Length: 212
Image 1 (cartoon, rainbow, N blue to C red):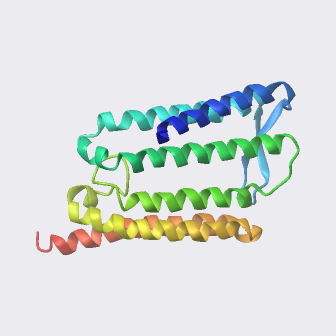
Image 2: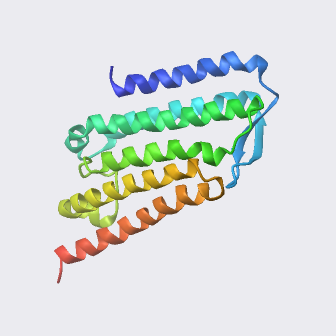
């Protein structure tokens, strides 16, 4: 079974779950949590149950459509399996949030940020794996003016970026065990890596094109 088929299956299941839960759900459902993992936003139960599945389907459709717009279609084709893997972990990530929101609506109490830590860890780690395989394109990866302009800069940035993303994923996992710092260990490393990758691509481009 292809990864895209699994992604569609997850989306379909989320709609089924929403329909099954709807008659029993409270009129207002939690849909937003603050940095401390506490509920601070609600939505009526229709959108509370069907917004995320709808967004998941829309995002899936967008992911599937992107390769049709890509000028470097062969490069997308070369890492098709990893690209579909990115779609799958993204849809799985959203489904996990969906399940947690339903559990919260039915009275289960937990720190949302802390519960999200393993999901963030998984998506960061897989993105790190995929980054090292991604070929130059205009939609997926660490896209800066310098990586897009030079294949060597692209390769170097993505090889290092992949390792750093995987490290961020491992660090994010600690958020599941330490409630007080969960938000920080999830967000801070990935922000630092993102900024570093941009700077690194610029520095590498300047090294290669010195004097131009």
